[in-house]
Image (cartoon, rainbow, N blue to C red; front, side):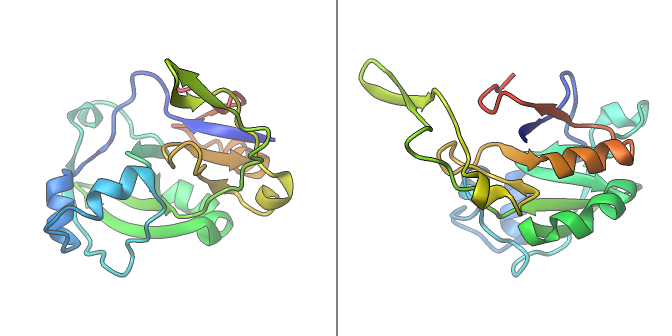
Amino acid sequence: MIYRLKRPEDSYEVVQLSLTVLAKLINDPGYQIVRKLSSSCIKLSDRWVTPSCIAHPYYATHPLTDISFWGNFLVLNRIAFDALSAHIAANGEFLPINVEGYDLTLFNCTMLGAEVKEQSLIKYQDGFPFGLETLVFDESDVAGKVIFKSELQGCKALYVSKAFKELCEAHSLTGVLFDENLLNVF
């Protein structure tokens, strides 16, 4: 079983780091890399300089979830990192970040899951491509992957295996939802 990983409604990104600041940190003055972050599987570890930033004000009065999002990155607290890191390390990279008073690590997923092109149908509107009608992953390709992205979806979402979901449940990790509808953005 494959799930689309989603953030809960009314949640906030704990990491408050602007893309402008990130571009300076990774020496990307023309924003060539930063502009592609949400639509690719670019590795950043060779350029990464540990940034410091504030947390979203919401978390001054509310507990931080174990897993949250910063764009297409997962933000893992120490509990989530300890529970998941050995299982997802082959599917991306861990990037340290200092967020005022929190022990957090970013996870940048750099793994693509192969789609079955014949069954992953493109939706058209007024004769132009407009997303997908169906998305089907190649089971033999994703069998060994715990977390991955879809090239046909423009790398804009994270997909996870049943093993990822079971790890989250076994460790009672909070902050993510698992949707069986792979194309549901809500």
